[in-house]
Length: 361
Image (cartoon, rainbow, N blue to C red; front, top):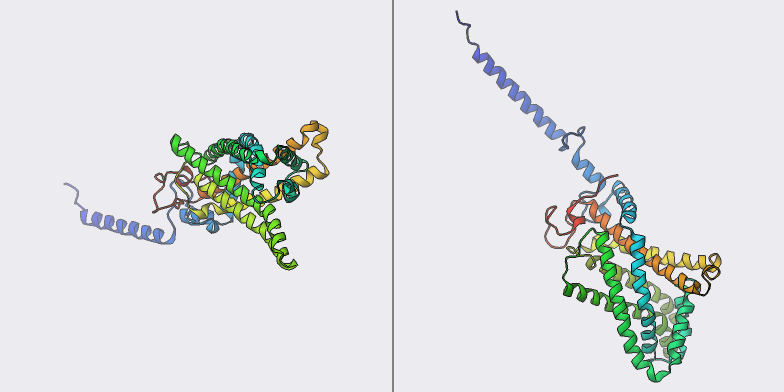
C-alpha cells in the first residue's frame, strides 16, 4: 500500500520557515548597518563616518581620518622622491634669480634713486639665510656700476631672461605637482606653455609686490610724513598682507598646477596654510641656525653664501610640494566628489585623488 501523502503539513512547515526567515532578515536590517562581505559584521557606514569618508570639507574629517592622511602623506613624500624633485625646481630658480634682481634694480630706478635700494632691501635679510643677502647686494652693486644710462636696456634684457628661466622652473613645478597628484600631463604644448607663462608672470608680479611692500612702503611713509603711531601700524600691517598674498598664491598653484579636474577651494586651504606657516618657521630657523651654528664658509669657502641660498630655496620648494602632498591625501580620504561642478560618482571625476580612496592605517 502506498504511503499516505502529508503535503499539507509540509506546505505549512515551509510557510512557517519562510516567515521566520523574513522576520529575522527584517530585524537584522533594522538593527545593523550594511556590512562588508567576509568581514566580521563591521558596519560600513560607521567606519566611513569615523574616518571621514563622507566628509564634504576637511573640517568634517575626524581624528582617525587625519591619522590616515598624515601617515599616507609621510609615505608619499618618500615614494614621490620629493626631495630630488624639489632640487630640480631650485636649479631653474637659480637661473631666474639673478636676472630678476637685475630687472628689480632697473625698475626701482623709475621711482627712486637706485643707489638707495641696498639699504631699503635690508628688511629682506630677515627672510634669507646668513650670508645669502650678500649675494643680492653684490648683484645690485654690479647693476648700479653700469650707470643709469643702461638701466632701461638692462631692465628689458633682465626681465626677458628672468621670465624665460622662471617659466622653465614653473613647468618643473607643474611636473612635480603631477607626481604628487599621480597624474600624467594631459595639456597640449600650447596650453601648457600659456598656463606656465601666465603663472610665471603672476609670480614675478607677486614678488615685485612683496618687495614693494618691503621697499616702497618706507619711501612713501617718508614722503607723506604720517604720525608715529600710524607709521608703526602701516609698517607692521604690511607683513600680514604679505602672508595673505603667499596663501593666495599657494592655493592658486595647487588648484591649477596639476593636470586634472579642478578641485574645490576648501580642499586646498589646509595644505596652503600649512605650507605658508612651515615656510615662515623654516626660514627663521634656517637663518638662526646658519647665523649661530652652521658655517658654510668654512666648508665651501667663497661658495658658502651661495650654498646657504640654495639650501633655503630647496627648503622652500620642499615645503611647497609637501603642502600639495597633504592636500592630495586629504582629498584622497573622502568618497564625496571634491571637484568643481555637479557631483559625479567615483571613477569619472577626472582626477585620481578624487576618483579613488586612500587606504586606512
